[in-house]
Image 1 (cartoon, rainbow, N blue to C red):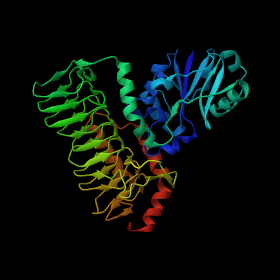
Image 2: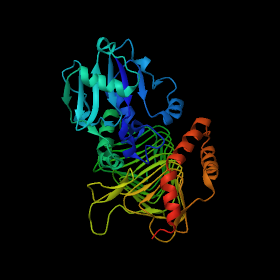
Image 3: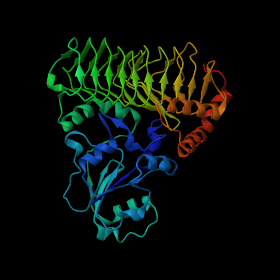
Image 4: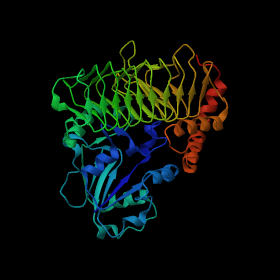
Length: 422
C-alpha cells in the first residue's frame, strides 16, 4: 500500500504559517503532522500533493519521494490522507471496515482507502479529479479524527500532542547530562534528556502536569524553569527562561524570557526578556528584546483573528499571535491579541500595539506600513540570517519568497495608502 498525503484548499485558512510550507509540516507536539501520519500508517512509499508554488522547495526537503505526480499512484493500493489530520490519542486510527472507503468530517475529505483495481478506472488529469472519482466510486463513512482548520488549533492541541508523542517515544531518563544542582519537580519518569543535551545548574523541570523532553544537543541554562508538557528541540538553547506548559520549541532556537503554550517552528530567536503566549512562530523569526504579545483581552471576550482578509471569531479567550517566516521585530515591540503577521516583515516599535494584521513584506515604520527598502533588502536579511546557521538560500527558496511577497502586494498597498495606523 502506498501512502498519499495531500493539502486541500483550506491551506489559506492557515496563513501565515502555511505560506512557506505544506500544511502537514506544521509542528504540533514533539513532531510535525507529517511524522504523526507516517508513524500511524506504515506504508510502501509516500506520494505528496501540494500547491504548485511550494512544490520546488518541498522537493528539496523530501528529494526521495514523489511530489504532484499522479503516475506515482499506479500499481498499488493507496491510502489517501488529508495533511491537516492530527493523529493523536484514541482518535489517531484511520478506522473503518478495512475495505474500500472514504471518510468525511463535516465538509472535509479526511482519508480514503482505494485498491489498485478501482484506481485503474481513473482517467482524470489532476488530484482534485481523483478525489471526486473516489467519492463517486466507494462508500462514505463519518470520522471524528482531529483536523487542523486554523492556526490556533495547533496551539490548542499542542499540550495533548506532546503527551501523546512522549508515550509513543517510550523513552525516559537522562541520556545527556544534568547538573546535580538542578531538580526534577514531579515524577522522574516524565523526563527525557537525550544524548548530548545539557542541563546546567539551578534548573527546575516541573513534571507534575506532564512530560518534559529535552532533545539532542539542547542546552538549558541556569535559572530556567520548564513546566510540562513541554518539548525543547535539537540544539536549541534556553537562557534563564520561564517556559510554561504546552510549549514546543523546534530545533536551533534561542529562547529567553517567558513563553506559554506556544510553538516555535525552527531557527527562531526570542533571546531576551518579553512574553510570548498562545502563539505560533515560524522559521527564521527574530523577536527583539522585550517583544511581547497579548494573549488575553481586558474584557475576557473571544479573540478575533484575520483569516482570508476577514475577522474570524476563534471561540477562545486565549489567543496570541501567528508570525510568518523571516519576520523581525525591534526592541519593545508590542503585539496585539490575535495578531496575524505575515512572512518577511520588518517591524519597528512605535510605542503602541501593532495592527491586528500585517501582510507579508510589510515594513512597519513610524506607526505605518511603508514600502521601506523593498523586497531585495528583505531577501538580503534572510540570506544573512540563514548563513549564520550554515544554511544556503537556494534559488528555489528565493522564488518562493518572491511569490509570497507578490501574493501579499494588494493588501500591502492598501495599508501603505492608508498611512499611519490609528
